[in-house]
View 1 (cartoon, rainbow, N blue to C red):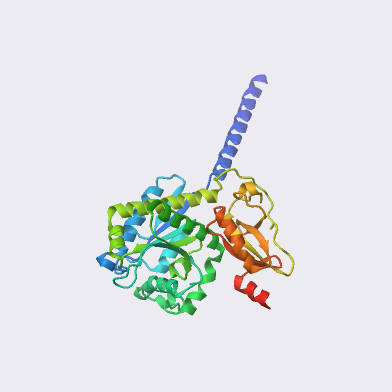
View 2: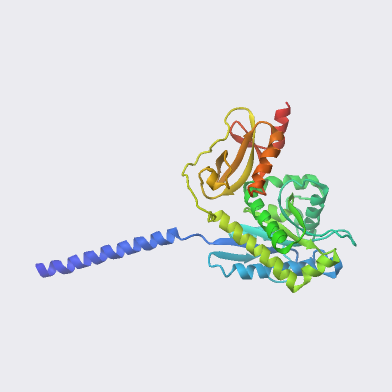
Length: 371
């Protein structure tokens, strides 16, 4: 009997060990971080050359820069890179968006070169996110990039009657990216900062405009205008191997910085597990705040987490935590709060409004105040 029991006990112990090991393995797989998916979109291609200022082709420069960005990012084991095109081929704008959406991408970066009238000395870099075209210049940049849809088959059907020449059509697409606007601005700001500080390029800023290629995506998305091909000096730089290497390095570094911020790896993180909003007014008055950050991490609203700023409030919006500085019922006072936030390093901060504890459009808030 004793001899029979020993193998049974042995087998039972082995079974427990295997079961425990399997459990740890499964848990390890569950805890493995999802790879960060970046979709790189080289603007234009194939029959669409883009702009050809100073004799250079936008499609060629955009592709070379994108391939260099991807080459470096692919060396990171936690990043997966997907291209909308890797060769000189024409890709419909809506297909570019589909590629990103199908990949469940974390970022969409579209690369282009700007143009102005012949002989113009307009130069410098600007990065766009989807939003209201604040002026005619932004609208014209978007219109030029959007006009490629006329080269596509069945564009009326694919874009549901969208007309690049119509401001009303552009306005109609803007709400789709609102959920990702904060992160898009974060990346756009990082790119412009790299261009300006590292490469000493003229900074034309982070702007909003109605780009149809950004509208097609459901993730943080930016469109980078590397510079003006119509300005001969800048066109030559963009077309050079040296220029393309510097530009691609700046974009790559910005993407990596953005990912690091999103992962919450900057400084010490003090987490708070609350899923509710903090410090957001719940009365009927309109309140203005300065949005300074958005993160997947729930940070305590203490000065040590926000470069010394106090009076911080937090709101959970979907899978994202948004952080706000200050509190005022006077819209004019927001200018002071915004400057204070910028001095603390939040250069891409912006004003938001709340009524009865819910976020509302700024124009709606201002009109409500006027009434």
